[in-house]
Length: 86
Image (cartoon, rainbow, N blue to C red; front, side, top):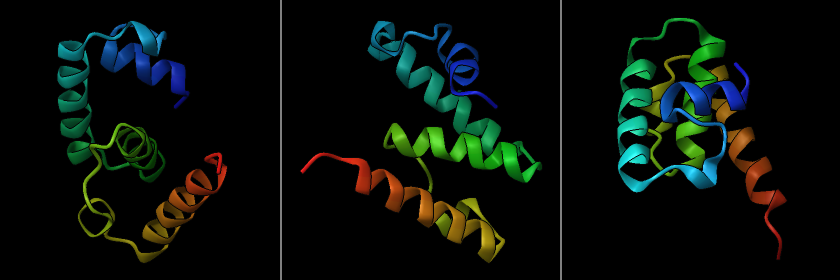
């Protein structure tokens, strides 16, 4: 799943700055539903990562049953934190 594809699918645009607050809330809700229904590990991770970046991801224990997937998610969070200036 490509980031631009996710934006188009859930927010009807690939320009994040153009997403209205109402469209953001609706897209997040749709993404959360799809995360709950998705069985493919890679797709689940992509959905969770998008939700994490939007501040709407479920806790790791809820999102990932597999400890290795939880570890990958923690690594992703650590990389995002390390990339922040300051």
